[in-house]
Amino acid sequence: MKRRLRGAPDSSLEVTFAPAATPEDRRTGRVLEWGEEGLFLGANSLWPPSTVLELVLSLPGERHPRRLQGEVAWARTAEPSGMFVRLAEPTPVSPEASGPRSSRKAHPAKISRES
Image (tube, rainbow, N blue to C red):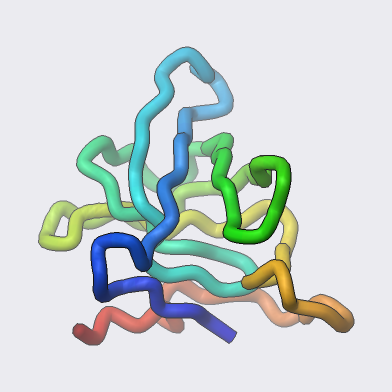
């Protein structure tokens, strides 16, 4: 399952991120699309595939920021520029999500690039 967050400017979530190896190198981007095991992070600062990132994002309705770790699967400079980050551990796609987590692995090609 994936969620599209494109549209109005307030429809995407702001996230701060940095390589795990250099946490002082923090950047800010927007989560444009996400699913149970990965997300497309819209950003101007891109890291190459295999880079492990630490991500911090605040979901609507949650009191505390969610801290995630993931690995850059691919990056692109074409608009919208960004990276697909495969999450290290599956996470529900919304605060309301419930039930068992899927053991199915996400694949970057499953993230839609439609307008």
